[in-house]
Image 1 (spheres, rainbow, N blue to C red):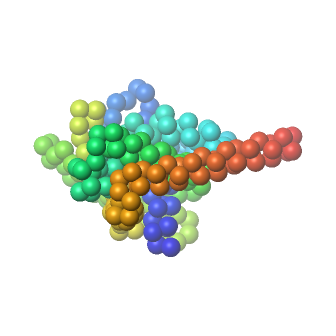
Image 2: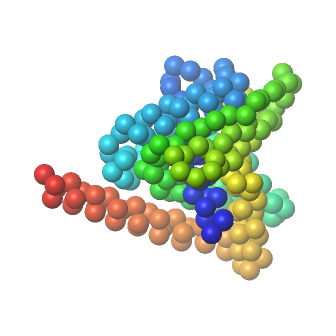
Length: 224
């Protein structure tokens, strides 16, 4: 249950932290300023968008694809989650792993966006040296009920600006959570076995999203 709770909170607030207006480039902002500003922007959008609140999966998927993914380093995230096995994988296997992991997280993010209600974020003091290329931005999620939830981000700086490659929820880093699962599958059936597990999981998530869209469409028609 703790792992499930961590993943839910991660997916919910990972989704809050990456929409960026086209007039501002991520490379022009400090990492903490970037996270603070876009968090509030996404909170505002998600709360105001009736289709997102109603669970329109296609609208949410489009939002994730277009606005969230450009600011996440999925290749590094996948490499770290795969661990030492990444180096032994072929370039084609690495690409398949990254693609399937990316798709898995798309569906995971999408399933949480419609849950945004009254949450807000508070940020811890942040310091950075001009030479730093990797930092941690620390925050907590404040809800109307319950204790605040720790939420920290690992970011790296490259030619495209700052990108997130790991998140810590309730004391557990996302990469470490997946690393154990990935290692178990690789030990059982190799890299190809892990890829197949991800493919099957994504297929089920796609089918579930399609059913949700169909159900929402029927409800809209019946309520007219």
